[in-house]
Amino acid sequence: MPETVASDEALDQESLDTKTSPGRFRPFGGFLKLIVAVDSSRSPLSRFRAGATLLALLAAFAGAGYFLPAYFSQYF
Image (cartoon, rainbow, N blue to C red; front, top):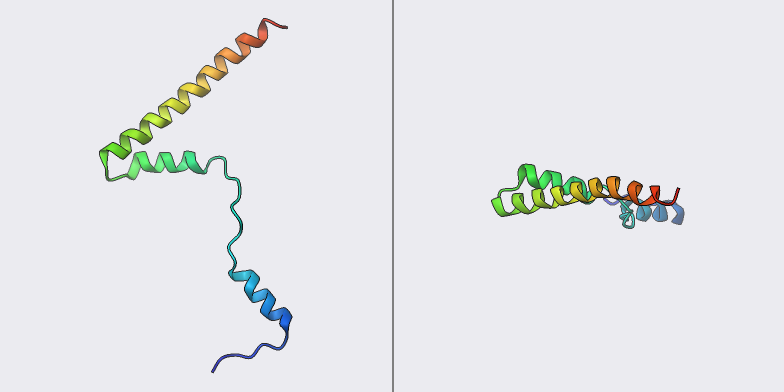
């Protein structure tokens, strides 16, 4: 037999528990997915794409780490 609920508040609480939370901003979620894809993807093409994307991100951060301070050092 189904259980009876004593109040509407209990019904509201149950519906809140089952709802999924709205999309949260996760800045490293995509980065972690790339790392997992490089490690455990079955397709060699997927592994290559994920590895190339990771190397491109590394090169972009390295370039920003070198060129931005060099650029700003001209003004200070």
